[in-house]
Length: 198
Image (cartoon, rainbow, N blue to C red; front, side):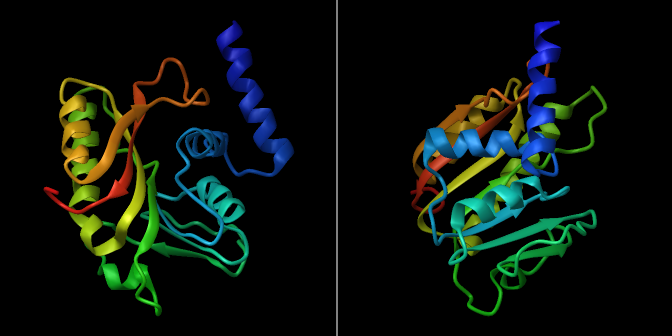
């Protein structure tokens, strides 16, 4: 019963504080603990629907920063002018479209993406999605930038952390309190991007 009350609390907080989903508190905690996003940053949100992480990104970067989101689904929330939403597939979209007119790479990439779940092989599909993100980082993330991406825990989870560690100064797993206790989701956090195989 306590678990249900705990998660109802995040749901109520999201409603009261104007967030589109309770998942906002995952990113808020990740940022509080890991210092991923700063005022004035350019942030890319992968799998941005329904938009709660974009709301958090906008709050963290302020009016001088930029938040860009992409998702396969339509996101029709009315965001501030410095929040841009694209409908598309990360694995096929031209990175230049995500970078926009400035062409500047992002200071931070965040992902709450997850593959369709079936109960069989979900972990491997999740890791594959994260690997696709890592493959695209050279086109998207500036040197020294940060990353946080969701993955389902499983037998190759630590392999993913180690792979991320070859591209970042520091790579660790972190499970926010707002994640449901029954969920296998965790987040791989990379600090200080240095490029593939660095």
